[in-house]
Length: 104
Image (cartoon, rainbow, N blue to C red; front, side, top):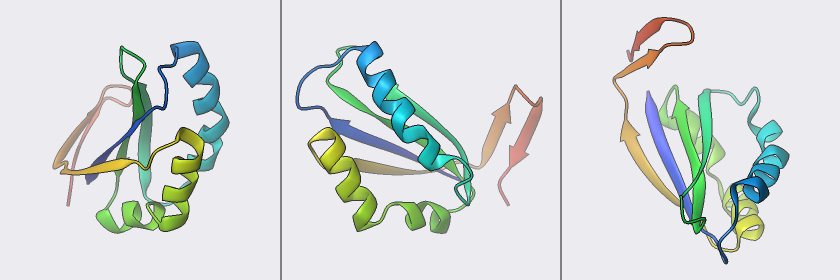
Protein backbone atom coordinates (compact mmCIF):
# COMPACT_ATOMS: atom_id res chain seq x y z
CA UNK A 1 0.00 0.00 0.00
CA UNK A 2 0.99 3.59 -0.55
CA UNK A 3 0.03 6.62 1.52
CA UNK A 4 0.21 10.06 0.00
CA UNK A 5 -0.07 13.27 1.95
CA UNK A 6 -1.15 16.12 -0.26
CA UNK A 7 -0.57 19.62 1.11
CA UNK A 8 -1.40 23.01 -0.29
CA UNK A 9 -0.87 26.45 1.15
CA UNK A 10 -4.06 28.51 1.17
CA UNK A 11 -3.98 32.08 -0.17
CA UNK A 12 -5.58 33.24 3.08
CA UNK A 13 -6.52 31.47 6.31
CA UNK A 14 -9.87 29.71 6.31
CA UNK A 15 -12.21 28.27 8.90
CA UNK A 16 -13.17 24.66 9.39
CA UNK A 17 -16.75 25.46 8.34
CA UNK A 18 -15.61 27.14 5.11
CA UNK A 19 -13.18 24.40 4.09
CA UNK A 20 -15.69 21.67 4.98
CA UNK A 21 -18.08 23.12 2.40
CA UNK A 22 -15.29 23.15 -0.18
CA UNK A 23 -14.23 19.60 0.64
CA UNK A 24 -17.81 18.33 0.44
CA UNK A 25 -18.00 19.75 -3.09
CA UNK A 26 -14.92 17.80 -4.24
CA UNK A 27 -15.41 14.57 -2.26
CA UNK A 28 -17.74 12.90 -4.81
CA UNK A 29 -14.87 12.95 -7.35
CA UNK A 30 -13.04 10.38 -5.21
CA UNK A 31 -15.87 7.88 -4.64
CA UNK A 32 -15.23 4.65 -6.48
CA UNK A 33 -11.81 5.81 -7.69
CA UNK A 34 -9.86 2.69 -8.74
CA UNK A 35 -7.19 1.78 -6.19
CA UNK A 36 -8.16 4.42 -3.61
CA UNK A 37 -8.87 2.74 -0.28
CA UNK A 38 -9.46 5.87 1.78
CA UNK A 39 -9.13 9.64 1.69
CA UNK A 40 -9.17 11.95 4.69
CA UNK A 41 -9.29 15.68 4.08
CA UNK A 42 -7.46 17.86 6.58
CA UNK A 43 -7.00 21.49 7.64
CA UNK A 44 -4.16 22.81 9.79
CA UNK A 45 -5.20 24.35 13.09
CA UNK A 46 -4.16 27.83 11.91
CA UNK A 47 -6.28 27.47 8.73
CA UNK A 48 -3.35 28.21 6.43
CA UNK A 49 -2.73 24.72 4.99
CA UNK A 50 -5.08 22.00 3.82
CA UNK A 51 -4.98 18.78 1.86
CA UNK A 52 -5.67 15.09 1.97
CA UNK A 53 -4.26 11.86 3.29
CA UNK A 54 -4.83 9.07 0.78
CA UNK A 55 -4.36 5.34 1.20
CA UNK A 56 -3.82 3.55 -2.11
CA UNK A 57 -3.57 -0.07 -3.19
CA UNK A 58 -0.49 0.78 -5.25
CA UNK A 59 1.70 3.60 -6.46
CA UNK A 60 0.37 3.07 -9.98
CA UNK A 61 -3.18 3.73 -8.75
CA UNK A 62 -2.04 6.93 -7.06
CA UNK A 63 -0.10 8.10 -10.08
CA UNK A 64 -3.21 7.61 -12.21
CA UNK A 65 -4.87 10.40 -10.18
CA UNK A 66 -1.97 12.83 -9.80
CA UNK A 67 -1.90 13.97 -13.40
CA UNK A 68 -1.29 17.43 -14.82
CA UNK A 69 -5.08 17.84 -15.07
CA UNK A 70 -5.54 17.02 -11.36
CA UNK A 71 -2.69 19.38 -10.41
CA UNK A 72 -4.28 22.17 -12.46
CA UNK A 73 -7.66 21.53 -10.79
CA UNK A 74 -6.15 21.71 -7.29
CA UNK A 75 -4.07 24.78 -8.18
CA UNK A 76 -7.11 26.61 -9.55
CA UNK A 77 -9.30 25.59 -6.59
CA UNK A 78 -6.83 26.54 -3.84
CA UNK A 79 -4.49 29.06 -5.44
CA UNK A 80 -1.19 27.15 -5.33
CA UNK A 81 0.07 23.82 -6.64
CA UNK A 82 -0.03 20.91 -4.21
CA UNK A 83 2.95 19.13 -2.69
CA UNK A 84 2.74 15.33 -2.60
CA UNK A 85 4.62 13.22 -0.08
CA UNK A 86 4.91 9.50 -0.89
CA UNK A 87 5.03 6.93 1.93
CA UNK A 88 5.05 3.13 2.06
CA UNK A 89 2.40 1.53 4.26
CA UNK A 90 3.14 -2.15 4.94
CA UNK A 91 0.36 -2.64 7.53
CA UNK A 92 -3.03 -0.97 8.01
CA UNK A 93 -5.24 -1.33 11.10
CA UNK A 94 -8.92 -0.71 10.38
CA UNK A 95 -10.91 -0.50 13.60
CA UNK A 96 -14.20 -0.02 11.75
CA UNK A 97 -13.98 -3.44 10.16
CA UNK A 98 -11.84 -4.89 12.97
CA UNK A 99 -9.14 -5.95 10.51
CA UNK A 100 -5.40 -5.72 10.02
CA UNK A 101 -4.30 -5.65 6.41
CA UNK A 102 -0.74 -6.48 5.36
CA UNK A 103 0.45 -5.21 1.99
CA UNK A 104 1.46 -7.90 -0.47
